[in-house]
Amino acid sequence: MAQEYIAEYDALVASLAVEYHRRYPMLDVLDIQQTLWLWFLTHPRKYAEWSALEQKDKDKLIAKSLRNAAITYCEKEKAKSIGYEIGDLYYYDATVRSILAQHCRRILRDS
Image (tube, rainbow, N blue to C red; front, side, top):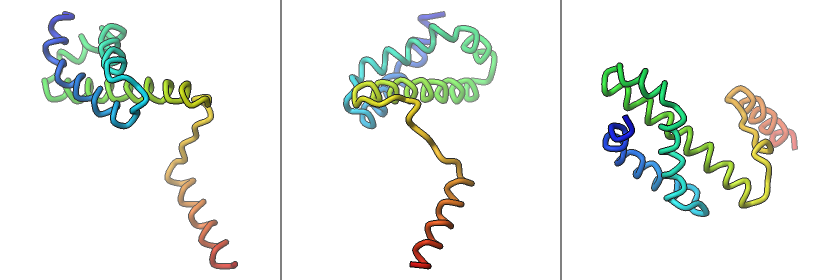
């Protein structure tokens, strides 16, 4: 099974590693690649389950999972290298951003 996914996803893993290295230049591309290969080793059931799907669907699921693994790894390593806790990050959803934007417009308009 290992040789199967290595041959099948080598190009995708290499390409994603380069993509995330561009976004996170402080990280080594080979470390990102290794993290992506580790995903296959830590998720054998998902890989086996998704292998029963049509190739297109399988590829989409694996690509998304690898992207999630890459962003998780890169964000943690970036936090370590810069010196903040990953828990310090906060992402606003669309509703909160909309409310904040309205509030800012009101403040600007009233001043």
